Length: 244
Ligand SMILES: [Zn+2]
Image (cartoon, rainbow, N blue to C red; front, side, top):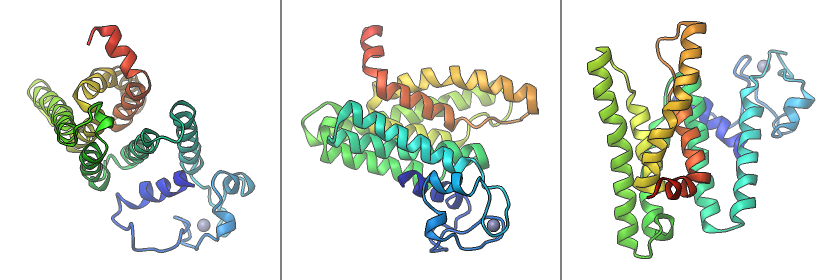
């Protein structure tokens, strides 16, 4: 059900119509979707992927997001149980899922997610400093702020370097804000790990896209999200292995 809500964010936030329509509607015929056609995953299967009214195909992204969301929450629940960290990391994963798909489809990471998430990350680190591995509220806030700074600055500097080398805009502002947001949640060590992991996925898919579609730009948020997810799960182990 949360995945279903994330779909609404993915479709509406880049278009700026988040609160304009109260009900779900078909993007083709604009017909209102009734509740029984709006059950996560199941309705897609029952309708065999087509709108009840106009019979146009429903994008497979909708059930995909619902499935990914559900699996991520289940995975976190198995590892963390119903702890504060479970809810905090679930929130971060929601932000990453929305950014991944808006970037894929519209090459946009909405500010509501990146900047909004950054503020939420700072606030949670103050209220629940254990997220940053400390007990003092102010140290929690400071670590979160440092994480956001390191996350944002690392991509910003990469962008400047890229602009000089390629002589054109090479890193989107949305990606910079997104990694700052991840830093606010995970702290500076973990966000540096994300910074170093993500390009490996990005390079593989980027080269494939370039060869196949001659794409000028590749969406980078999906790789930052994948890097963040890996750091979230195995980051502590990787950092210990690296000697930090
Ligand atoms: Zn329709």
